[in-house]
Image 1 (spheres, rainbow, N blue to C red):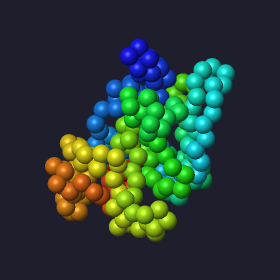
Image 2 (image 1 turned 135 degrees about the horizontal axis):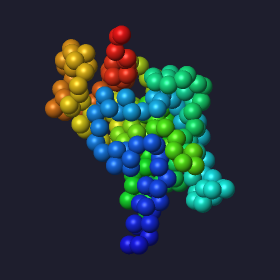
Image 3 (image 1 turned 180 degrees about the vertical axis):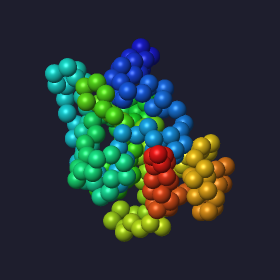
Length: 201
């Protein structure tokens, strides 16, 4: 039990972003997810590498490298790297804090937080900020391909503030009450674009 709480304390202390630990894991909608992310990319997982303790970092970490196809927010780049605590689906850490686990070759849309202490970061909202395609690996992705996070987009469309975003959701018949849980790739991209648009001067 002591070890379990020690893991939680370690994770919180790392300050994965400038936001609080509670903010990272609370349920957030697409508008907040988009606005609070440092960078949003559509990419393929290129590499997953576990690295041991080094310097001030007294614990193992995993570096996930993404080959970027399209940047939805932030400075465009060909690759993006994410360093988070070493984790897998069978680990004790994952049972306490469900950090996303990535597989080489999978295509994802990932909402990245700002790096915190020791260069650590995390997808915003943890698994809420990682969207995967239900389609088979290698299948061509189009604007109409369905996409969802681990929670089947639960609460993703609720309580949005933007009138333009509400209008778009109404046009696309995207029900904020979650009767329709899957989005298309094109719809998610458009919702992110609307959510991150700067107000006209």
